[in-house]
Length: 343
Image (cartoon, rainbow, N blue to C red; front, side, top):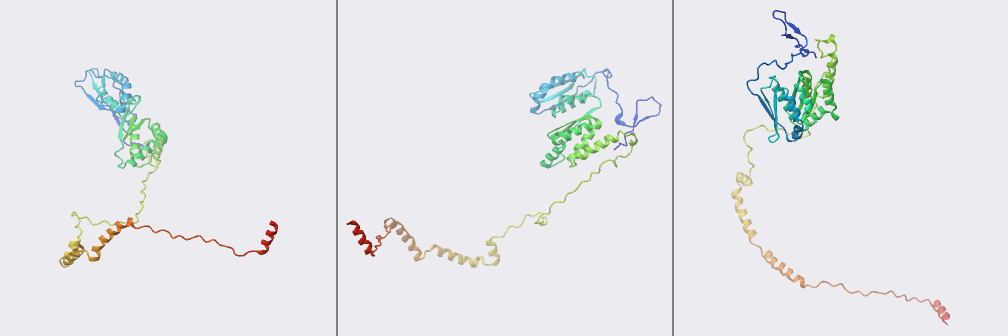
């Protein structure tokens, strides 16, 4: 959507002349600060220091000569302390740009956030800014944070690459922060996309809006008009939650603790049976202590049975002789035949 407050009065004009109005403030070129514009050196020394994690030590040690060479051109002194894990930038008598110390501070902050040196040095260029957005504060749940962070990256980094192409910015997601380096308008668009994505708006709709705005800005007839009719309308959908099967009614809140449960003694005292039943209970205890005659004889009899058990012979099985079946029926005719054959 076109910005209504893009008009700006140009200050670089002759005195007494009518003020010149600039239609688009983003296109206004800021005059470059050149060497020699500051005639006197800085009175006070300014310095900034930042710490870096242990895993960045090897990379910073390798690229630090390039950082020192780049900052020496602006008259800024850079120091790397591997023992304490700090980076320090300080102004010197040779500093010819008073704003250079702020840019040097931005460089060491980006290097500390795992931004490569080639992209961090772009902050020194005119019209290039950076922003570090903390995305962990948007969501309380770790699971939601991980899902929305992955949604911002996309599969194989496709969403991040599309965002870089549409905004002309370098975007790096590291841990719980997002670092963006690029032109002012592009960084503002990246911040808007990141914040809305972490608030549960899919980045596909936001990228589509950026593409439509990019095409509409090329049409001079639509300049200064409202672009909301061309953009997709995003409506938040509230999904109804599943109702539980058992609904528990909440008890009214009381600042006092719950009353203690009654004991058996308290119940007997309240009914008036405690002292009446006390005598009966004592009688039962006395009876349990005294064994009856049959119970007194039982332990001795059991002991005798246990001792006599090894001496009791086991029962032997009774012997039963086997009975053979004798066949008394004799065939006389067959017997005679056998005798004849034998003769």
